Image (cartoon, rainbow, N blue to C red; front, side):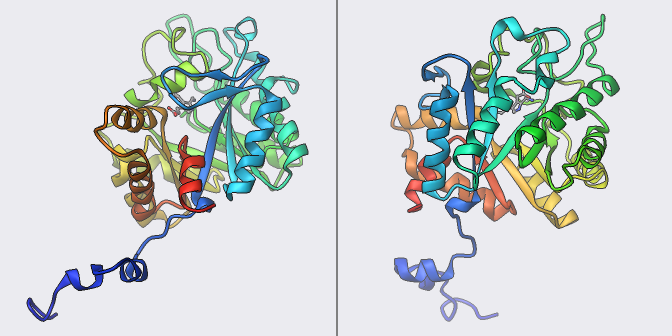
Length: 328
Ligand code: PBG
């Protein structure tokens, strides 16, 4: 290797054309998955803790799907705000083929058949207590009973037209049960994107507002979601989910866990996605609002970081903005 002054690393940074030529990572609209919230109400519902993000009635959600297609965003991730009277201790509404989620899937697939639809598999938007699964008398979230319901929920979503089912609940063994349910239910080509390394994080607050579970949730999710202290355990989680039939894996939240993205990518060489979650979106918006940072640049830099760390794609509420900035 040569040394200064023969070596001047600034030489290739001299002009935009040269920086473009030497870029090691590219970010494109096709790297993005756009998470969208659905309401049973009749009008757009802005979410106060997620400025710029709304819940959409199904008819308006379809417009978002068209917008995504125009922008070159390949897939949407859907999350329902279940009407209060349908939230029960057992979250039974999750498995109702006529629920808000399934209605939304069908409407999008009818109107924009070529866009990918990813669905969240977990019970928190459907339970009266806001947990992702069934809760016993002592407040423990039951694993095996929950996992069985999740398999039914995933099958119902697949029947409505979901292309990718994404279990975000962190129950043990649920990927295997879901894969079996899809296989025997005639949906062998429905993908599973496992939220494999999902941490018990303080960054989910605005999301819980969006799906209406925040006020309901007592305690935390630490008996099922992962401890932010752990990385080896994330690798074990990923190994299990791949072994059980996941097509791709997700790390969540995003920026604070890029080391996990990198380790998973290097160890398993499989498609890895990250979720730039609601609290991360809110931090960028808050920084932009007080002039501490420039929104467009913050968005593109953080999304690029995910790609550089090894992600195949990123779920981000900034997806439409980023796609526009990228010329999609
Ligand atoms: C629920 C779920 C959560 C998110 C996605 N699916 C919240 C949670 O686990 O409490 C968070 C997404 C975000 O914060 O943007 N299973």
